[in-house]
Length: 554
Image 1 (tube, rainbow, N blue to C red):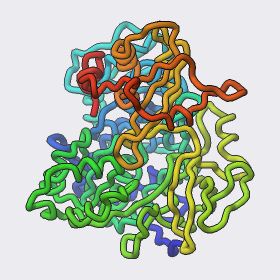
Image 2: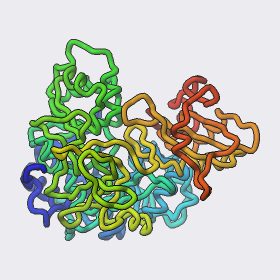
Image 3: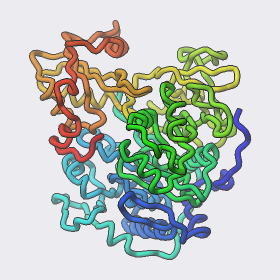
């Protein structure tokens, strides 16, 4: 059991993003808050002032508490203004993955139904591509230096420009009453048998994510946090930016992660704290060692996970301490390893029992299992509003996840005699690539639109990095099919991280007696000489996505 926690965010009945902003504005308006790499710098007062100006604009356009506000932007300060502005007035932030396009983007907007949306001018092509098939918001705010950019004619839609809106600096926060139970954000996470689900997160939920980071990393106002995670993830926005914001710390915000320049940024900006998932750590470790690998101030790194194969060597090479955790968007991060104490190899830590009950149960019966037995992790909160309100627009999915009054995570684990948890596998049919939880449904739907594809199943196969997948698309066809043409078709319709590496053509997909595809059989089947591999034939994902009109890849 973790020790009793201090409450740096104040009493639980005041855990809202608005309350944190009000305190920060009162205590440290002139303190530096956030800096973009090679970009703008804002103090707490400037950041909150611009978010307040945007919040007042929202109110003028009729946005009210509970309305959703879409943010389709790359990592940058304007995206954070859009989030903060919504939460200052009790509206709901829907920050969308900037790589989404086609049916994936259309699904997110159809589910979230934003009353207003902020769009980077760089991402306009992705928005325009699907605009005709959407229930459009009444207002679109364009972010970017190019004020000549215009949307196509859309009756009833007013276009505004972000720079002119945030130029005003209201002296006070707009009047609003926001409670911990009020919805703060919708974040989309992968589906398995269906499209991605929008997790509706109350204010206390997002504040708990910040609290968990603060407590377990010993974050203070003297820290400088480096954020290279997308702001549509809990890691980037709540465990990083909101945690630093709550404590009066500084944030250095990057547009994207780059292993080759990671150490230079850490050193040049005096970074003291950051977060990296397993593949990021492996990519950093794969860079050539230098004589100055320990010449920096970064001594704490949140890891999810710290790869077992290189974890100790990574810590030793860079002179830092990895702090592991486990969690999900729906439930926050209940398990953490200790910064000061021992860390059993491969463990994601012990539950923070001040906030959650956590058990390992038989996934068929829900009966709790004993020490060393592998089962499904289930979680429930000990305080109100500390976990998701539900999947927006998907009541059946919400009920299914909360079987027997416990949230069923779909992750298989065991625990040892000291209460340490070890993640073993995924029970649910999920694909995880470069920290993105991927909906196989979206890939399969796009593939089925290609001529000659009769049936399709996407599965995750080992990528060579710990806990990370490459994507194999298995298809049944009605005749001969060109894998490269199918890949180009998918690249034009999917985010880059959903584009498969492998394509396998089969006479028919294996099925159960009830006609469900046996995805485990497809995952377990070896990659062989008959499996088409885009890397082996020399197709580079970056060029493929760029050629199909995409704007970002990695």
